[in-house]
Length: 93
Image (cartoon, rainbow, N blue to C red; front, side, top):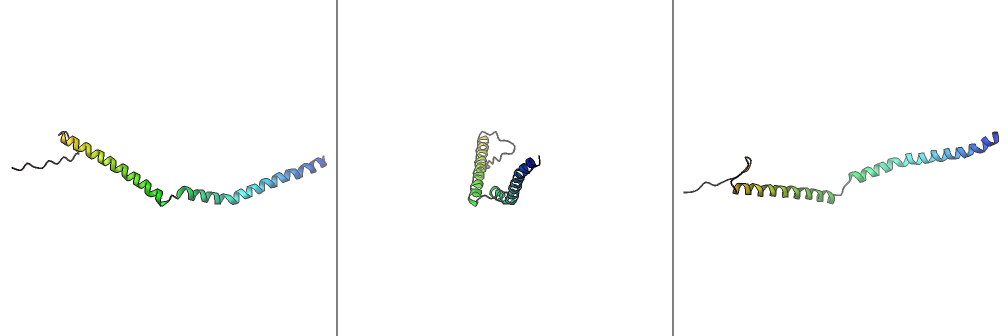
């Protein structure tokens, strides 16, 4: 019985030592992995930020143009909405 225990004990201790060593390596490398992942997730290049802002501005400009054309159409049909700016110059005599 003692011999069996003595034979099994080194095997178990090897597994435990291996697990402890792996855990130690994971603990040491974890801050580096977290920091690099955070930097990659937060950092965008200036070019990417400019392109995104340009897309947003073009989309807003298209929407304003569409709304202005619809307002002009309603004014031409003399059916403006209350907030439409349909300026009609006074008739000169």
